Image 1 (cartoon, rainbow, N blue to C red):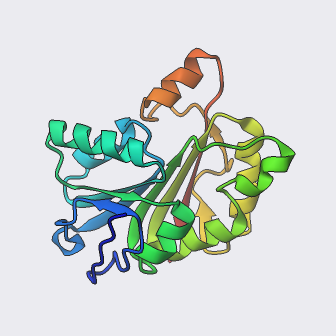
Image 2 (cartoon, rainbow, N blue to C red):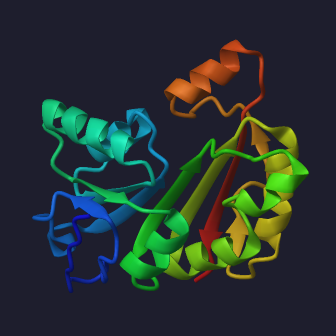
Length: 204
């Protein structure tokens, strides 16, 4: 395993199997944006290109996906993305200082629908508390899923986090017209599924 360590705020302790590239310095960027589970990278590239002043950090647990993303980022010549290979539940508290992230995005995570797999779900109250603590005041947390039961279950969990407030009066909105057309988003739409979006802001 390759382990790196860096002392620059806001990315603090690199107790993680792999990160790329090691040369990026958060102090060279005005903002920090985090995407969890970037998949093949459609939304990641969009974030990086739409926010050239930001360091966009993608957290992915699978090394093969990281390797493919490295190749694609090099091919596209995108230079403001950092890849972190780790379970996000470990990476957030280990790699990011409190109040250091401007935006956090989680799109279409595995809902683990079977009751016996509940323990595997990423979205739980303790994880959301960790996320909220890493967001800057005024920072945004965006969450999307194609499963209606999961959307409303996570909305209830978000409501338990006092420092986060929903941007949408409804809490959960369906099929927003400005949603980025990622691979999974288009796939679910073609299957006739509704897409459920939530956005929260950290209270000042």
